[in-house]
Amino acid sequence: MDGSFSFVFDFLLEQYGTKNIFLKLYIINLIFSIISFKLGFARKLPALKTIIVYIMLLIGVYLLTIFSIMQLPITESLIVISVVLAIYRFRLHRERKTR
Image 1 (cartoon, helix red, strand yellow):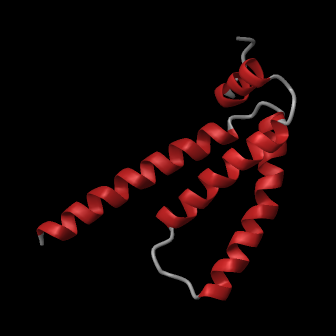
Image 2: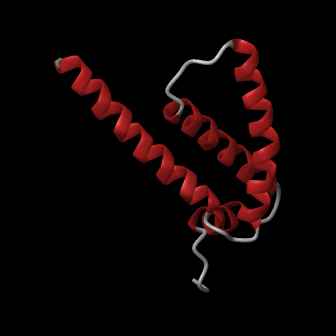
């Protein structure tokens, strides 16, 4: 490895080559961004506000994907955020269940 911290980018590059790598990274980043939003946002938003948030995610993830192509660890950070929030939500659910 040449000092890159982007393991997902390197894996996709080795497995699939450069064909459609931007689209693949965009979809992966979008999925993990949506998971992070769903796990991290405490209150349930009305439908229109949720749609606006998802539209903004679609636009914002485009920029994050450009950073991923530049081999910054954006996708890996989103994965870690999703795992940490999932653990937090699971422990919170378990704690509330025991009360």
